[in-house]
Amino acid sequence: MMRREKSLLFLPHIFLAVVVVAIFYSLVILMQKANIQIFDITSPLIFCFLVGICLLVFLVLSFLSDYRKKADDAEKRSAAVENEEFKRIILYLLGLVVYIVLLPRLHFTAATMIFMAVGGYALHDGGKTTTRLLQAVLAAAILVPAVYYIFYGIFAVMLP
Image: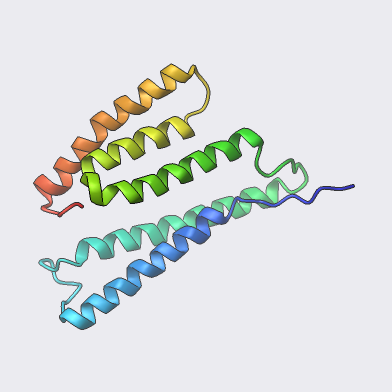
């Protein structure tokens, strides 16, 4: 009996496409309701617009790259997702759900540190478990306060 393989390669592209559409839809709604010009340097929407444009460009580039890679690897096809990779994906998605639940309660810094540590641990390849965990926690402890300072302290962007 031949087992059908499902490729999960393009799932992130679909998810990111939904996010990009939601960003631009929200921007249009905000522009209409609040009568805010988006292409003004003092506009509070310019940052969201730039993030949406960057995500759209990266989505297209990533999709084209993965599409070419899939076409090249069509003959050498193996299992689309191995068991270990699938477990990592599930752990990461569970971490994302926990992050969404914890964000209103713990606010940005604590919730993001927890999420980044879990995500870094889940997605890190190789090495001992303790080494992977230590690297993930250390990266979270350094990067999250730096991101918070840059966005809140320098750009004056309110974070949850």
